[in-house]
Image (cartoon, rainbow, N blue to C red; front, side):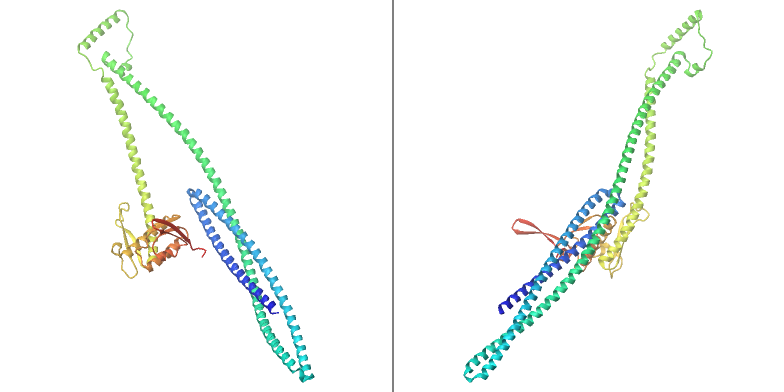
Length: 511
């Protein structure tokens, strides 16, 4: 019986140890489920951010495609993890069933032990009866009775020990039953959470399908826009070809017009030199008649005399007409160039005025927004106070400088140049963060920005970084332990051997 009791106690200890291990595994699975739920929420946030960027900017369409692929891959990984968790849950259920069967076997063993204890008690009663009979029978059996009494005392002590062991075993069985009930309740809770997670996964899948549908629609619109751009490019090339042809034709016509003009000028000069009559007057004279006979001879004689007189006058500049023609062409060309330059100057001036106006509006808008961001960030980093930027020449913002005025808590408004080194660094950081909030980016690298800050300012700086890390991934280069404590991933360089550097990384998220 003692051996069997020891065996039962050993089995109970094994069962208790197995139950503790199962409880630890259930807790581990619960933490993993929470991690996966947070991962799904973060992925959903990234997905919504990608959709917003795709709606607001066609320029980010390719980035949205890659982001959707990465989200789809992570959703597949999450679904695989959910399936793995379901398999582990089934395995846990089978293990719990096996443990329940073992507990039932232990209960059966306990019943057998109780029967054996009852049999021992009956044997003890028989021994007591025999002792009474022996005491009454004869005094000669005193020695035997003494031996029987000794055996009786031993059996009574053994029975007491058995009773204490039985009570302890009953208490342990009661504790085990309580733990089994608690494990069953926790199992039901985990099943409920798994159903909720499956519902969330189904909702995520529906949202992912809707995102894919929107992505297909955007892809279709993008293809239509590309086709329309191709048509516009083709029409533009055709228009450019027609324009080049028209320009060539205009050049040919201008050359022909110049040649005809030169010929007309040559004829005018010929009429003036040889006939002494201008070309216009000669064309307008209707009295010109054809001469014959003696009249023609007389006219020819007169013409020869006049020609001789002209030749007697000396040589004339035969290049004058050509020089005049070249000068006229040069004048026409320069006049056209002058008109083109004037038109270009006017267009450039109008463009500069438009650019100045748009730049002034954009600058004013950016300056106002960054000034607001700067004031809010300054209050967060300093825990109060006021700060703003102002233009040195508000009438001419394009050429104006910018003054930074800061008032930390407990100080009056003053120029940033009058602050201490740490206050200057914190004010500059607030201004940079304000500019970054106006034009954010997916990544931000900060190199030793917390070096001049004290512990309180580093705490406010880390709170600001954690707040902004929802939309932007930060890479911090620092020697501050407090700044390192907020990072989920830490990279460091160590030199275990002289002259040999080694990169060490630590991830704190799961822990």
